[in-house]
Length: 380
Image (cartoon, rainbow, N blue to C red):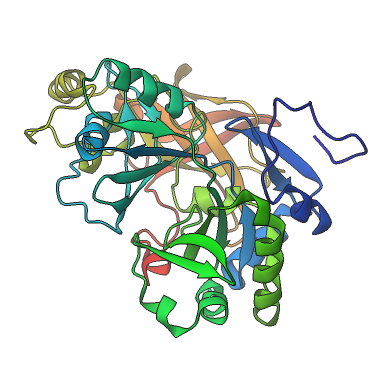
């Protein structure tokens, strides 16, 4: 989908507060995520990758809509939505969580932000959790209010992002820890800032709380970042696959459970609190999984872009799984992929064949993440 006069499908697909600014700064193509346009093309995606890993990029991720949960029972209600134990989550802290249904299937893998004792934001991947949460609340008997607030994040990501934040907010912002948040304002623009992002690099998310000031905020950040090489950009498929980061609907969906993804750490079956899917996940853990997520290195010419279909994986003539996300990494000089394969074919070093868009290719199962496995860059 490309920019043109009379752009768009109509008013049913929403434009973010930064939409006009991204077009001014060179956005050429958009996708749709959470019923909103997201810029996906600022030119060469490989250059976007190098901008991210060498300097910094600013991304419109207002599509990460917030589900706001408030009220006396907010903490109890949020715990019911996720198998991750939140009992020690402090005010001002963020956590990566899974939201599961009664069968243990993953509905979303958002970031949870705790703004106050009884005030949470669920910062969403691409699915309708507002409706899910409101539906759960109807029959919960809990005193909660659930809405989508006027909150629109930007991602400032890359090794220079800290210096750009210092230029914007002063030295005090530098002690913001990984996966923590802070309420700030920028020349009267109300923001929540967190040390989070979808890049596996040092980065920040700036949650704008007044959509009328989106263009103003974008321009202020770009101006502050100019001396540091800041470029407008989009979330990098190359970098997120290198980092083993999931894309919901691609690498996980309602039919995927946490144990297939190796996310045992995000499931606490021993905690006293109940959560949706607890019994199903207990049964799945006891029985074991029939498939697992793995990494692949593909032996073929560099793929020309991310896969747009699930590529079948075969071994000894039989289908054993599918590639969910594939891309060429110019840094690793390899085709790398995330895949879901049968448990019996998931051992490291296993050789398989992948039916790529350009023909069959040999591939080997390897460890993930492919780069910086301890996330030292993001957490430094």
